[in-house]
Image (tube, rainbow, N blue to C red; front, top):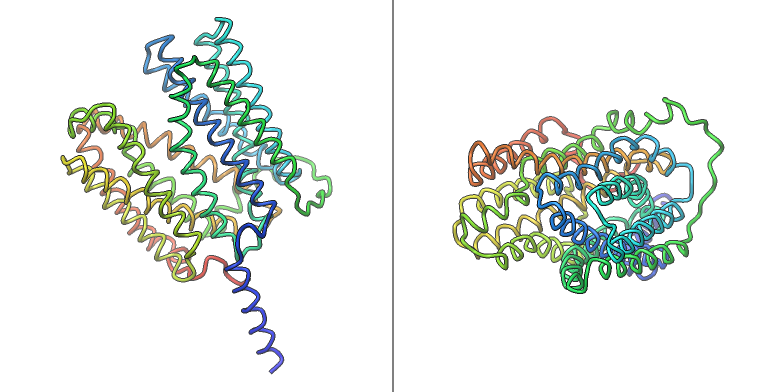
Length: 420
């Protein structure tokens, strides 16, 4: 009888936590605002760097190098960054990362204002940004679970994703508007955004017990990689993102669809690029109110299948509004996948390992985006844009079906947080 009462009491406490307003967790709210400010700053920064690079060189190759040079340090530093995040205070690491990006923005502002901005400067800055982000991404992912109870984490991640999608929509538009006053003006506003983020993160408090000194060795550095490959649910969730985005993404080909398939101008391209983020934002807001509680594995793989189907619809459509709706629904489905995958990875990983596992996850995410754009370009050269996106849609559906068979632990997962 006592055990039954205890179980009922625990269930009631869990229900209270699940429905508790997120404002009840002020450290998380500070973290949320810091991420929004930093994302707006980063989006503006990349708009200005891309435009300035193309203005200086007129080379599409150099534009590609900007992205590649930001990804390379994340790959090179993945093991070291994960180890650092697991050893030290994660909010302070993030605050330092924001200060680093703010200093980079100051250098770019001075270079633009005084006329010594060059191709070499922009490429060098891209390497520095990638180095900073190598530490920022795992610290960011590993910090959120420390700021809210695990019962609230799925809602918190959905709310966080809503803020990020809003920033992704708002940031480039703001950057483009300010660029009229010059690149230095954009970099100046970016500096303020990063400074605000650094200040907010400096005030984030959580229980941090310094870990006993652990010598950095090959064994400790590889611990995150071993953990991922030993946990079927974690490996399945991380690899699902890699292959689904690698095959199903159509973002890199949107200019070709806008011009040659849908016959719309730059305004149409802007709407096409914004459509997935609008769908993702709408769904993430819904998930903060109605979090996923049951059949998480089936919902995850079902969302990936919907993403593949909307990719097929987009490939076959020559009606602008149909294409917009397909991209928006695809963005919403991808958001379901993102929230479930992030929740599973964070909830199934012990805190002592979250930095190293998050570093591995960050590399998978970066690789899926970068390699996905490369794959789209190569297949489009062979098959044309429609054939490329059709192949990607069918590939995504195949991945969803294969993951049901290859990762039964993931497919049959019920609650996001399983009792250990």
